[in-house]
Image (tube, rainbow, N blue to C red; front, side, top):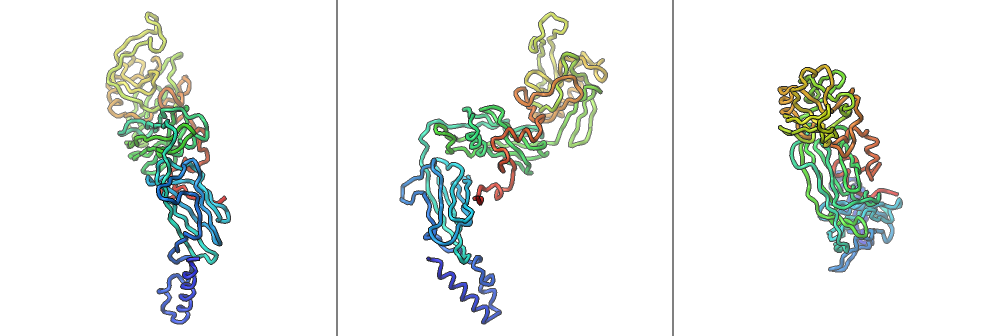
Length: 419
């Protein structure tokens, strides 16, 4: 084989060390064959990709690499021109390797195969090939949310799919292709809210002043016989200070925390019996200087004792069904002592203006000690933080998969593992 001369070189080097002593450094690593420059292992391996010019590989078929003679495979790295790695499994005896994740269609791949012979001398071969275009016409597009910008530390990342994905194996392919990274790095996971919607959040809130990016690696990836991944626009957001507002319905006070420190305590009123404010963690959805609030929007008939139609100012929205933190000058006499609202958190106009100017979309608003039910996890805003981490992880199609934990690029590299 073509690496035999290299073995002779190692032996000669060892003899030279014995004879000259002082020339040890000239021979390198005491004659260790594994320290030598890898030899060309072309005649030692075989692989099932195309070798003829102009031929393209079928992306539906797994990639396979094997050793022809003595020796073994020590590592295989396969990735396309966009940097996407292919997962794979390496036989325990090093005789073969095969891919375990689908190849992308219409992509250029580079495969680096590392081997060693019976003496431990390292060899290497770099292979390259292209895959054919997908035959299916349907493409899955992903829209990440929210819009680019700065948000509070409670803001989840969302992924809206333009077509439903129900099969768990197909969901796993989709989820592996959706990447979220943050600086500083945190552990996080996707949760399938529905067949067309996923949410991503860390185990704890995002760090303050973090940079978060989300992108899809699904372009050209086969999801099913009739569906392939399409191109999607990446998203970048940042977080500001860690801001949390805790509303205690029993003490009738809202405490505003900035980076863990209480800086303001505001007298408030929350929902009265029968209209109790939801307990739990909510995320600020939007802010509106003026909102017209009408009882009919929450099922109160006009002309009844509970009916209302009011102009409301400095309104911070926390649910899509109409729960706000807002100015309520009509209830100042009850603020700090009684709950008299229809579910919103009311405060004086001056306090509401202060709160409005110091709260942002993505910030946390929690309610404790209310008689209301728990905030919905999904569908009425962002109640994602009311799902404990264990249950959240169960909502992933990659439960116990390393993709749920953000790591360094080297750790994330989908390299072969022994089986």
